[in-house]
Image (cartoon, rainbow, N blue to C red; front, side, top):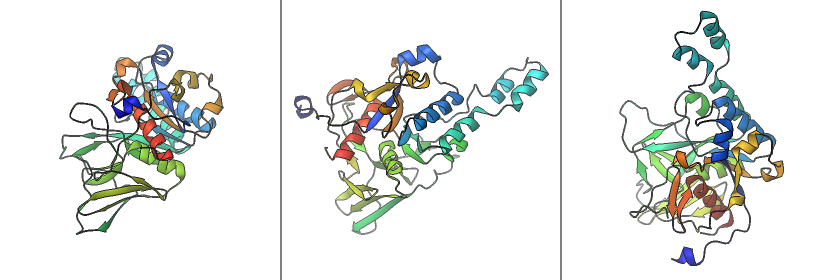
Length: 304
């Protein structure tokens, strides 16, 4: 009720959403797009001056439109056509090159079902510091396993962040974790990791004690106060079209670079068929990627 009566006043927009919207799908075809197009998107955003780019999506499976996959999936192809396709570079390699040439944070998501054959996720530059207590681990949200990006993409990325957020019991998203434990390994949220990469920090830190739990998450020497479980309570503003730029317009070269220059960029989707809508205290439906953008605004301006 408080948030509805007094939504947060937006003073500036440090994060822009490059949106896979309905017009983009009508213009460039069904989702998912080939990774070569995603490589083009990263190159364009980098040239336009994006400080860092975060993907609110995961690239866990090989690109079905990569030349080698087309050759494998179409046995009737003539031998000459098959050889020509296999001689072309893979779409994954093109996307990995673009990622490595920029400051990109790839999104990851959690799985609540443990996979005994899946190795634990790799360690990330996250520190845990207990300021007082008996050495117990921090009471962060815990999940069984992680859905990761293809290794060739993960290895090229500057960072990796989890975009999973859990709602309250009434299915409204009010509390958002900045850090969590997945498969026994600490991970940061997508917004936290994007800020770390944008600020050029080597590591980030979760400070906690016993019995009070997590005190704050320190990103590039900037402490962000949280509740005892490492979560923030965002102060939401209404959804704003000014936060969004159509990805189709970016790819077509129709966006003024000034809209992207100096910004943190989140690539996500508002297209209805892709079903990434969440209920917040002030909106029955808000694209999930905008929740991450508003988290960044809350953190950067200290307005929770």
